[in-house]
Image (cartoon, rainbow, N blue to C red; front, side, top):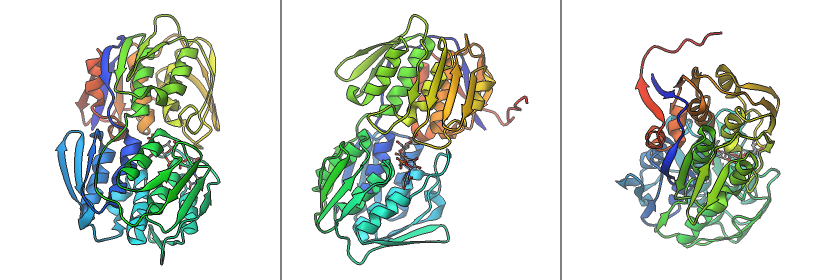
Length: 426
Ligand code: EPZ
């Protein structure tokens, strides 16, 4: 079993390059299905979720050619089937985007119910509601969702809840539907805007992405394109918080500072110095960390995907902080792992009360999901002693070369292979 081992207590210093955005990449790759020609996607992160999505496209018949570490060329014109089988799809939540893309291309789709991070119920009702407004019917048979329409026509969709996935899926289905589609209460995340820009680079007509009303005029054809993915807001935020946690001095490069505003504001509130430059941010922390309260919200609020990471930082702040996870039902599974390191956190439903402690102590812990795993690395870097992190496949899903990037910042971190599962003391 592979583990990440960290000897904590070292201040991070130096420069780190941020990779392309995972949540943009896993929406854009299904979007390639809609093209009538070859798509070249640049600045794509070399992570498990991207490689899994590329494998699914290949399995469906697309020609997938890796040009280099961060560039894929995909010819979707060989895809003849609207079916995405269970064996691969079930591993990743973003596979649900294949529904919208296949529906947009073939007016039908058959996709396995997706898997992904487990933090409570992850429904698809808003996705299916949107498809219904476009004229599609759906049924669930044997773990597969079947969606089909005689003819996709645009419509006016009101999302009952701000949903990134539903916004993405409806955009993918609507860009070739006949007539106009309006999505009200749409998600405004940077990856929604990136998907819209990608689709428009193929000849789509998507307006208003980044606001809560997206208007789409359907077009008959979408061409191949060359498109470069935006930097990853959450990867950048993770390294910013890690620099603050270790009291270091780190330049986080290749970012869009506007995407980081809520994270920057929260770090400054905690007494962390954040200097913004054109495409980088510098993080320094010399004094103590101040307590503060955090409530996760859809963009431009504080991102839920940064919640475990900021909680790890608050674990060593002066005073008591409150974290309110307002997006997901159960995104505090990592708290038990932080408590193995001495964190003083109590969770009641969507609220975590964090009493800052002087220091965390290294221990054997698990990554319970992608961002929880990132939080464990942050806690381990700040802790004294050695931390062993198991189940690191969760982390590899969304962080490119995570051990190398932290090691280059001066962390004593390495990946080890050991088949003796760590016995957690009760
Ligand atoms: C996307 O998940 C991200 N995943 C998640 O990031 C992120 O946490 C989430 O958006 C919120 O920003 C990808 O982009 C691949 P949602 P998604 O639909 O689309 C409810 C990571 O760490 N809802 O915006 O599944 C839902 O229960 C991952 O990179 C419905 O009720 O999230 C939740 O409470 C983890 N019905 C809220 O909306 C629906 O049909 C937001 O979910 C859909 C969602």
